[in-house]
Length: 278
Length: 269
View (cartoon, rainbow over the protein chains, first blue to last red):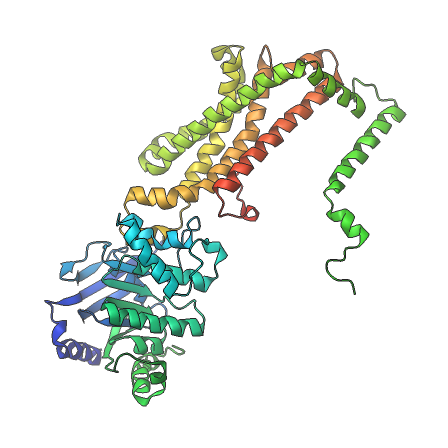
């Protein structure tokens, strides 16, 4: 734990842009305690401290039960925190924000809406200009390889296609922050690699702040500037690793010794915790 | 080896929609023969052929049309009143936990009273005309719509509500964009149960006291030991029930188009 704190401090101090003033995200002393039905407490998150600079791509990696999805839901404003402070763009987080795009583990599409109508949900909810954003919606639908499916209903799509609709929905209103909870988990390996590439491209072009929750260590290293490593019971951050591989990253890079060293550094934490197969 | 498309004769017969019709014809033939051979009196069991004759005469003479119109009017108006109040109160109860706590126990208590038992009271209050039948029909059709509306409005999956909340949806938007569409399949189940019960409601009302209607006609024929005529009217009533059930199903398939009929949910009255 001392080593982890040291790493965190170094990581924060090493990046001048990550100072409190212009950090896009700052979390101090975040705690989340769930009450179970029999009245006992379950500590899902404890002592979460994190500062992320403007425009950074952050991956949160850890095994199931480490509270990474809970952390993302708190950031999305749909789950209350038990204690701690969160600032986004310098403002205290107090609920859902128009500046957020969220991709969930499951596609969560509305079955009575077509692909295009599902992608337009944030536009409709936030009463933005329909005509302007419909063009953007169509662009993203095309980008994720669903051109021609705009008028189809979710039950006519495969699980992977539905998930890609969910990704379009998170991007359509051009949010400055993108929160993604294992967005590619349901995709086949090749589509996943393609979507990883597209996500990197979107991030490089738009400089959005992205928080990606994943249980794939290579995916975390491939995409992120900083990898937040979490372990369960209770969910906590054990390390924050800065990945300084050059951009744009390529799939071939995954076979280099540098890439392997980052992966090994992360995996070490899980081996020492006795958690295998992550 | 036969290709999958090559059906045997037996398979063709089994798959044919005519099969159930053939079974019916066989059953009626057996019935006709049994009554004749066993010499069953026609005031106990009429011949299927004389039921058909009664049915024909009833329509041809115009006798049924007037009574059918009265009963159909009672069914439809009673159903609409019952369903509309079930919907409105269902929405109010589902959206206000306080009102639910105050009123729902009384609604359930009312539902436990057999409507047949209060039909005589309603006839005294609302008279021998169509009004009392409409009230009885409405009280019977009300509850299934109410119960299904409440269950349906609470059936919205948590993750859909969370997703919309994350995109800053208001309470009203959550209702309009998720809760209401999710409730529709349940509401249609309630409407389907209610419309079939409405036929029963109208006949119950007419049995207690009426001047016209198919229920009134059944009592009259029973009084005259006209068994064939009674059976003929039962057929008419059954046709009305089936027709109305089809209408509700037809509307359901169009409104709740995203659900396949195989996953239809049923919640009884």
